[in-house]
Image 1 (cartoon, helix red, strand yellow):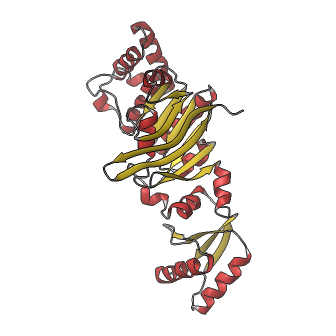
Image 2 (cartoon, rainbow, N blue to C red; image 1 turned 90 degrees about the horizontal axis):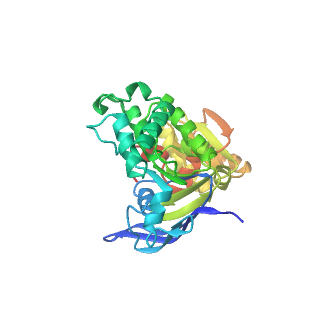
Image 3 (cartoon, one colour; image 1 turned 90 degrees about the vertical axis):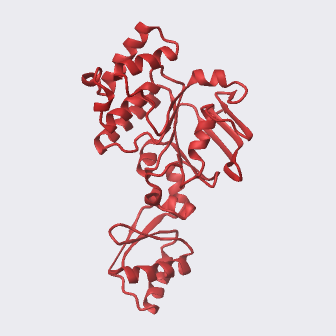
Length: 319
């Protein structure tokens, strides 16, 4: 039988008339990296905050390693680490001082905390900046220190809310390696992310949440297969023709398409014979296709198809 780190059943959280979390049900297997995707206000961060005992739910239940997050919050807190969207480090202290304080708050003796701090500073490439004032840290350095603080005592379950937002590509890749290494050591990782490639590369399972509800769940490959076996890419030559083509695509295929930054139309497609119907529709409308190709679907197409929005629409906005 599969053992679960997180079990959520019918979780509800309301803010006035807004049901931020509306009956979420999830199972997160132990020792895995589990990703949560969703558009603006979907309820991702609220769900994480409830699981991390930072917020109380209004209905349903949530357990971490079998412990109820409401009734046994004191036990849950000893088993988890949390890194939110915004740095929790103290600007008036150095990196070492921050980590030592976090360690002592987690029950370590000062000497133990100092030793662990040195290990983490080395692991996150911050040793040379260990005693530097934090106002001289770059955004990437601050983010690494924040995650290091969450690992001062290696948790059984780590919550990472947008862990790589604002990082440069090199630092982001380093962070991916850190997350993989954490899972390899047995820690379950539950992360929210606005980057589809991040979820695709890291997560063994993904839940897509919209309007407080889970609308899709599975492995990255299962989610991609759910929107069709392939993706149709069209170059119509002009924005006017592309707009008309999108209307025809919706009429013929019944799916939404998007226009990339390069001006190409991207559409999930389940059956290849539908391409012929689509081309006939273009011809009848007097549209000329400049180029056409078939590609394997990506998580971007999944996100677009089941939420009606592209990931780019959601970038940089807290959910």
